[in-house]
Image 1 (cartoon, one colour):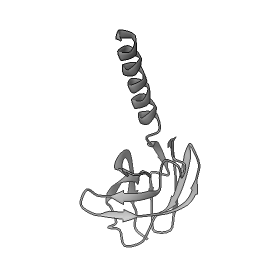
Image 2 (cartoon, rainbow, N blue to C red; image 1 turned 60 degrees about the vertical axis):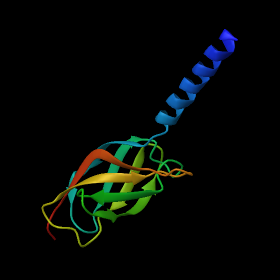
Image 3 (cartoon, rainbow, N blue to C red; image 1 turned 90 degrees about the vertical axis):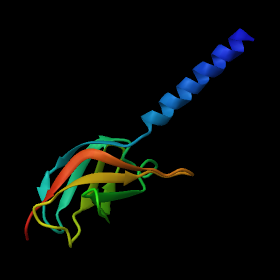
Image 4 (cartoon, rainbow, N blue to C red; image 1 turned 180 degrees about the vertical axis):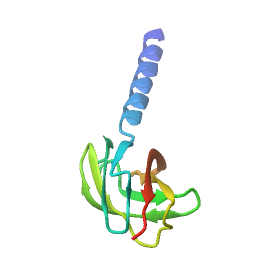
Length: 115
């Protein structure tokens, strides 16, 4: 009985650790600023289509979807959309897939430059 309880707890901890390992995590944006139409390359982990279904630029009040032009496990590229306020620094936010999708704001920011 005691062994099965320990095995169940270890299995649960292992599954929780695995679930956290699949969370997308962005580390850098290159370049860190750009204007409408520029392509920004973001590096990190778990950025492929199985982990990220949509990407947004957010200022904390408004979330603007971006067009993803390339997507792989460690690199995601997107195009800066029009209509964003020049001089504003936006955080990147991702939408995860599945039955319980989550919006996760990333520590990576992009500054919008003038045309």
